[in-house]
Length: 386
Image (cartoon, rainbow, N blue to C red; front, side, top):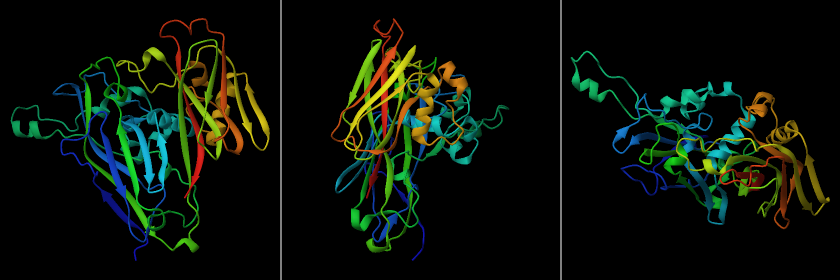
């Protein structure tokens, strides 16, 4: 029996015309007698982007996807299920992806084959070419057929940041299809106006994913007695608004093992705005203090009070495991780019029975004005085991 086998799947709801906004793309993964190899799932597709109905995006169009998110921008939500129920559901997936990459990679990390396959870039301007047709055409007028056929759709391969691709490295661990049943993996596609942005975006700008395939690897299943448990990092998302100088955000989080939370913001009037980047991680204005409160069954009532910008961001880095390189360093803290705050709990805590509260204290007098409030996106980092 081969140690590693490579598999490719077409969607269960395969669509020859491709998948557009609001579509769901569903795959069923299952190989008898084998384990899903951890962190091996890739989603491949060709991209067709139009600046207007019937008009392909060209190099003169100011239309782009977020350069940190790349082609993950087209995935709105991800759901992972097996016969026992839902393992994970990620809302606001592109913002989650950007938060993780901003905290764990620097701009130089995109100079790799994986990052290029995902359409990620070091700067925003470089992302303009990612939605365009590939190739060049003859300009000498001698070969009209070549001039038409030289163009092709750009194709990409992304590694979704779901629990199946965020497993804890344990030798011999993997998801057992025999013991746990097949996996249903569903991608809900993002709305056009949230996927890319720019001065030339209109209500008729759109995208379509074609020739979609899922790839993964499997390894032999040695049986339950010889197989270690599969531990996966997961996330639970909460989305609320902050519209006053003192805002309390209360959350009920179905997480039995949570070790921290990261949080980012977007001004309310920019959500769905075609020109603005909907995946921007904006700075909450004049934030003076952040308090995180929870009631732990072991330690009792716990409060984390943070009072400086450096503390806000450094605690978010701590949640993800600060490797010393990131995109939320001091220059970004003060410019308001890639602004992420958070709190690390230093251990895993159950939040299933207890309310979690974040208090934001700001000196801004404009938050209550129309459209000046902010959307707060909270991502709680958890563990699940199968």
